[in-house]
Length: 183
Image (cartoon, rainbow, N blue to C red; front, side, top):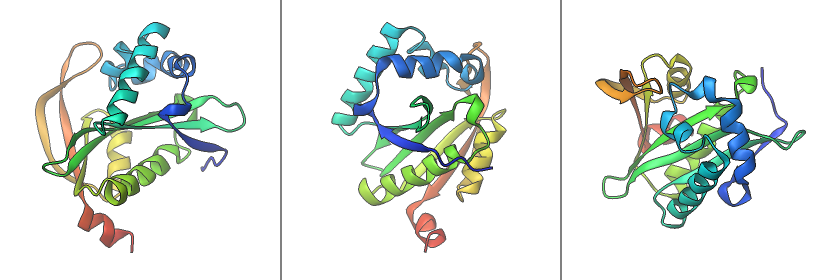
């Protein structure tokens, strides 16, 4: 099922209160897979600091942030960050989640599509990777849907929200593969 009454906002349009609400509402949903964002945004004051730091990263071209917003309610319903940017190697990483109530509606998929276009065509990067927990099957499906290749499993690579070390599945997509699949 597709949900079309949403838009993407950039960081300059985001208020700390609404980002905090998104995080707080979804803390159980994202606790195991987004522990750093959760820990850095679990109070309004921390969310304000997190957004400020994210804005600084964007100004310095060290990270970019995309937020899904429900047009009807004006609430934030998703988040995608372009992070771990290495301009020398010409690659970056995606991290993303969507509000639990909006899962399965194509929002994350569209955000990933738009972010891929941004990374390959505006930033001129050569590779995007997604490193996801072995238990995050939904994120793995998103990667495969967008023609990412599973490049490997990194053992005990990620400490989840409850402190347990987990394997990460590493997916990569090269610009040449992206161009081939989008022509």
